[in-house]
Amino acid sequence: MGDPKHLKKRYGTPKKPWDGKLLETERKLLDNYGLKNKREVRRMDALLRKKRRMAKHVLALPLEKRAASEKELIDSLVNLGIMRGNPHLNDVLSLNIEAFLERRLETIVWRKHLANTIKQARQFITHGHIGINGKKVTVPSYLVSKADEKSIAYYGAPMVLQSPEMKKRDNAEVEKQMAEMRGEPEGHDSVQKGEENEPAVSPDAPAAMEGK
Image (cartoon, rainbow, N blue to C red; front, side, top):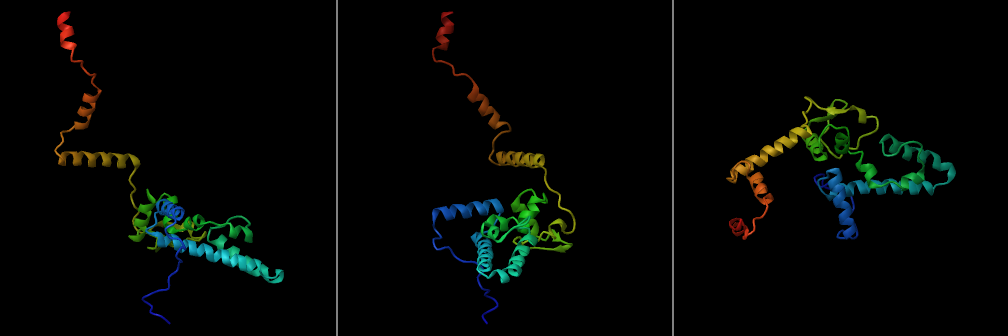
């Protein structure tokens, strides 16, 4: 049965984990989707591979047995919002990992402008500020169905997001405080810039003035 404390790993390890192209791809996914580590990438990749295997299995079935299995697989992906319109089994084979990452709660909260950044969206979720259908959800990797997407909202009191202008002003205040801590006088940078912009004086300038 196994120890319930040690759950079965839900993802596979790449054959070449130190491949440069793979590392670059994973790094971009981590940055673009605010993922915590590579395990989250590989879990989504494992789910993608599972759906592709199911599609290949259905394609190998006799025509009289294929219809029901094909409908079940495609309906599950459509209900999840991963596929739209009238997809076919061949469309399942062409899916990429981004299609699944876009359905994560963290991503959708950011897309719906409930957070300023995708990392802030993750923070809101883990701190219990996001709910679906009035129920608190604290798992950033939760895959949101198409039906539940419209019901995503703040759980409890709405969060007050900082406007870009306020953020810029606060950054300026932080820089000013850091300058004071370093003992730099106010306007120190502007004085330096003014000195740099002054025209250089030639050593022969005093002699030229005396000649006049």
